[in-house]
Length: 302
Image 1: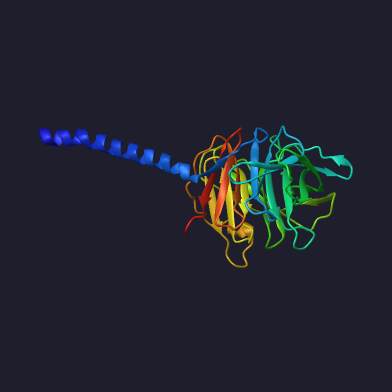
Image 2: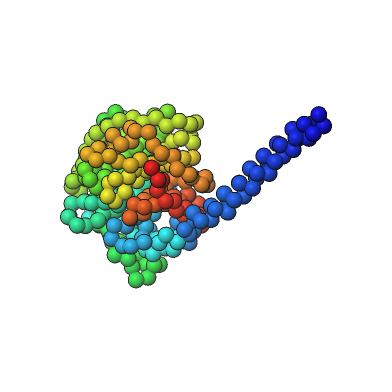
């Protein structure tokens, strides 16, 4: 009986020790996910990340509300490579709440474009929101120097009233831009054609609604990306990453209605950015805040 009581006491202790060891090992392994840290204090409210289609090992990031009409180029170690201001022929752009960034095709063949989604609307009160399209720039000779670039503005309206959104994606296969809303128990997926002209206004097409398990606000969708070849999709909430492999002849909004894979995710301070590497073999996440780590994950094995 005494031996039985001892085992009853020692068994929970052994489990605790094993779990503690596993936790410690996982924390050590976490360092393998970190490709670098944001190295410039200019990058304090990062809300989107997208791989360049023009430059190897270059990623574009931007700040959200409170910043102005600019975005940045970094490498995967987080070193600042360039700062870019975008304007129209009428002058500076008055941004409100830029929440995501994407890279994809545009009006000219064999040319890559940066898309910035000024789509945040916490009060769901804006009659329209803007997408800015900029031809991918050259990298400056000096990282501290700033370039000014011309942009085309697309104003979009929702068919069912204003929405708050933080996810902008570009589908290179069907030449569509995607917006996924942020809040509530279900989020909505909208599309618009990429072949817009400067200063166009279009009404988005509502494609579907998605439900993710969890509690609000942790399950709110805050970022997403489509791989350069159009074959993979990721969405991100504050607490999880959702991954899909696209089937042949399937629209992305159809892909999103299938059950996703939920790969490992290192909880971030306020993670609102996710983007595939240019080769589609991995993806990156980064949080708001100065000097934040850039996490690097290989895509799930299905």
